[in-house]
View 1 (cartoon, rainbow, N blue to C red):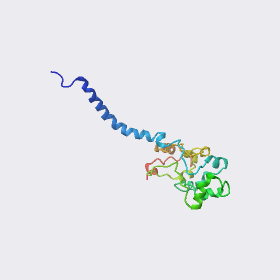
View 2: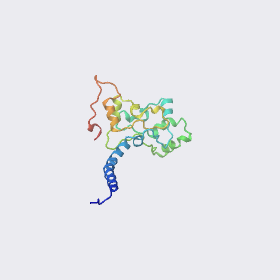
View 3: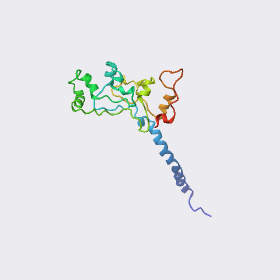
View 4: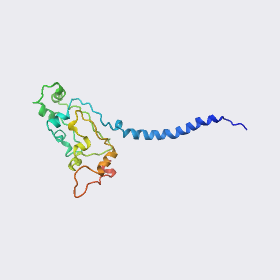
Length: 192
């Protein structure tokens, strides 16, 4: 008895079966791979700010400590963005006529904050406390990189869950009480 379909007709059926099996895998794997890539973590992307602020000049050349502009990093969950008053503390006398500082002067005169753009932002479901980390001796550069050598700040670390867990398992801070504090790898330490 002759076959109902010719032998070549099996090929499209096989292709359809393989495609039906691979598409769900790709749909799950692609976002997982993308979020771990430099495109997903935004590593190396310099963020354009409303004011040309050069950390090299302020940190390296003038020796201004991170905590002068970001005092919340020692005590609060959020390090904070400096208010215009901090900028004008110096720039009321230094470079007070510079055209580069026109947005700072406008912010000062109008009493409106400078709309700085965040460089490091974690998802809303992640709890992070700057104060806990700085009090434990974790240097700012561990997460933010060598900001003193950046004209425009950019992410140098992925800030992914895996990266944070690696740091919690082998923290860069000092050894306390004869051991490193590595017990904060429970889910509820960061996910609240």
